[in-house]
Amino acid sequence: MATPPDINRRARKILHAVVSEYLQSGEAVGSRTVTRRHDIGLSPATVRNVMADLEEMGLLAQPHTSAGRVPTPTGLRFFIDALLKVRGLSSKEKQEIRDRTGVDSLDIDEVVQRTSRMLSEITPYAGIVLAPRPELERFQHIEFVPLRVGRFLCVLVATNGRIENRPMQLDLEIDKAQLERIHGYLELLLRGMTLEEMRKRVLEQLGDEKNRYDETVAAALRLSQAALAVPGKGEEVIVSGQANLLSTNAAGEGDLSRMRDLLQALEDKETLVRLLDQAMGSSGIHVFLGAETAHEALGESSLVATPYGPDDHPLGAIAVIGPQRMNYGKVMSIVDFTAALVSRLAAGRLGD
Image 1 (spheres, rainbow, N blue to C red):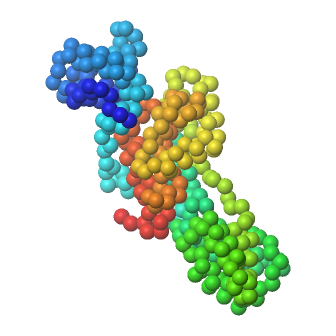
Image 2 (image 1 turned 120 degrees about the vertical axis):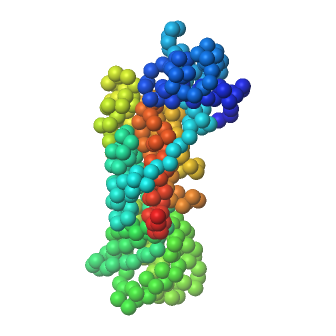
Image 3 (image 1 turned 120 degrees about the horizontal axis):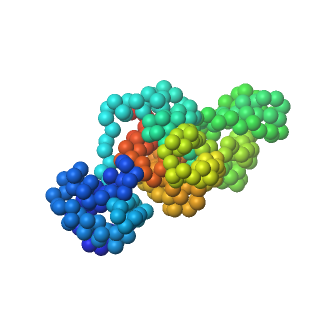
């Protein structure tokens, strides 16, 4: 966001102090609290004057005449974008995340399940993971297993190790030797492509006149076309720790109807996919604050999300949802490190 006018270094320090105190206590913050707990080097009277200026800018609000100030949505957004210093995780914290997610020993499907649970346990809010989308994954192997006459099982192996099985029907008789030749041809033709790229390549080859006269190539293309036309599994969103939100006022103070609406929103996969799609469309960590989610039930909540997978080809997203009054620095560090781990696993090159 653009820097508000006249937000000088002194005003930034005071805004940082007020927002930090509010996020920790949930109470309106007065000038004496700022001078007592933060190294501002100013008198309470001066701090009050700066806080009044920040209120005029729309960054702070005063709930009651005699009360201190709280950040407005604009003030909280400015704090996150321009003032927040995200601390790094300790070696112990990083190892705990590795252990809980199982990235050192498990496949990608199990890891995304465990990642969602880990995020809800370690933050502690609700953890959300958009599993790798088959349409976006790259595949290193395609194989056909004959089941019975006219029935085949297409086995697709992604570069991250995920296996997808697609039963299909095609009136085609193929012996074992021809099947081996088909697999060798498809290995050269389709290896490293996404499903959409595979479909395009197969259609191109089907349109090539010469391929109609090679029995093995023709059979391989017919099998591939039939297999790739079979719908794969849909988008999978894993949510864990919804119960955590009951104790963190993620829907607003004492409002049971809002909490019910929030929990229902977390069951609405389309809402979550839409938000995570936005996070996948930009690099780095994306923080959605309340109204920015464009969903009324999430109006008092915040969503911290980031994509995972190759920078130019994200496969899914990882997120934490909780109250707007959350420890953003810690949550952002956890989400960022976890996404980096899962990215390396998804790329098949997990490292230190």
